[in-house]
Image (cartoon, rainbow, N blue to C red; front, side):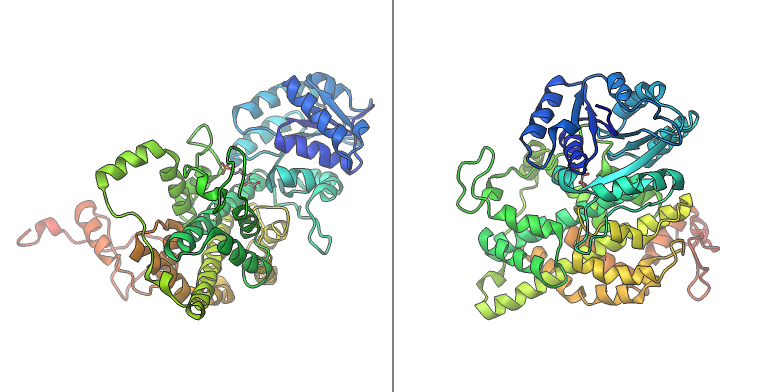
Length: 513
Ligand code: 6PG
């Protein structure tokens, strides 16, 4: 009855991984303090025809699970592997405290939840004192991928990676060519970092698609069934081919009934409340962390930031309604384009597709720029090609056509080269530029109709600003220098880089001031 792998946490992710790993032939122990949750998982194992229930062992004692590893294991030759699948923060600290006395030098613990990368590095240092490898690994794709093959981003030592590789490759999602969507990201907290930015990009993609769905439905007058058909066609071919969120989007739009919703002629989406909540602790969670990183690393990623802001605005509906009563401004209306004939509409929908592609590609670029910056700052040596490779299947930002476009470009660049994608890879800038007019058109519909489209707006404004040879921020410089002795550069004498200018005007001493 010896177990090969231990899992801590039998929730939807931990439970899914327990069944996935056992389906792949490993004898799995799953520990949870919640008896009912363990029992439920055992029942699922029994009912699942792809799983040999004899390979699944439930535990409500961590100590007992650790004793179920074979005798003699638990050293560098035969390390024990324990995978954590639990909420970030204090629960992981608690488990680390409980686990460490039960582990031996050489054992490997994989934290497979979302976690703030510095917390992972702190725990890695604690574990290292006992010779234990602590791996911070992003596991993406939600509970369905956890069951059938997730995309994974492990951050750890090379030795731990070499040992884990055969297991992780077996469990990972596979591309149609059979390549596993797991690769070593780098040392320390790099794996959790890449997963956090994956989620930042995910936020932007969710917002872009949600904004465009509303524009298509309310402003352009398409039914949700028509939008589902449109999304399906985008998903099947063209630049959004294989985009996971477009794919689940068209399926979801076709649902006429759902949990708590008996029948909705135009789809359950119309019956779902518009509040998107965050983690219990509002200061935490991958979206908030990504937004913090954008500010702290000084990287421009406005679509990711705007998407997060929309989520914040949406989350407290009662508050929002009171504000709306006070503002009392127009609500979103129909666009004049809703009256176009079929041929004109077809053309407009192609423009919408191009605009969405541009915004989605833009969010990838913004997220990858943050990863590049962090990789340089922390000396993680993260390869962007690796990120794209592990995101080809099993994860939420999977986007086949975009991956096929970006991967060969990234393969030309050595991982550590300090790059700003739109500067260093002209092909990417050219591709984004092709979507500019379409993004302008789509956003202009949102402006005219008072539709809410912050991520679409931010995607467009990002290109506009970064394309601008002469931004009007000179006036900002003047005012900053006026009140704050901020200093400025003089046109024609500009220094390279972020350094502050050399010149200052003593405005207070000027005549007439
Ligand atoms: C994934 C998801 C997942 C994510 C939640 C989203 O890659 O599978 O990104 O890790 O955290 O499903 O929920 P929140 O945005 O509320 O964290």
